[in-house]
Length: 198
Image (cartoon, rainbow, N blue to C red; front, top):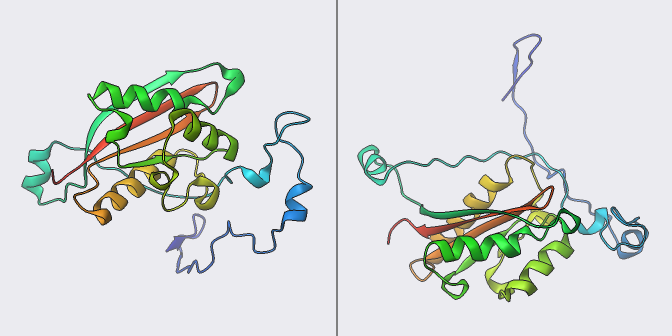
């Protein structure tokens, strides 16, 4: 429902097409895109996430409160790490934040079953995978921000919702998951989650 702020009239709106899909995109046009950051750089609008609309929410509470209210416990928030790296290499923060968050809860990268790493840029995502030696089959298994969009201010919650839903879908063999994202000015953040039914 849409409510016109001037008149107060409610109007039903049906969204039937994703605004982010560009069906006429082709390799020839992508090759013509100009670099975004450096004159001879390789990051362009074609291999970067698009700013998109989105809404997501994450509800945190004590287990006993969730049980009292009869709410499902999708995951347990185990740890969080925020790090700073050289701002000249913005985007690589997850490569430092992920190991910090994982170590702080007494785990190793090999203990993590799924990763949801925000793909601000394809190069940044690939760098983080290679630097950490992650199995691509365990990362962004439903597509990342290049496919889904990057709703600023909502991306973290979107990553949590995507991760916990996939962990639930996979069942008890999927115990631990990590979300991470780069942040402007050389920051990175990561969080470790455990399934709620362990």
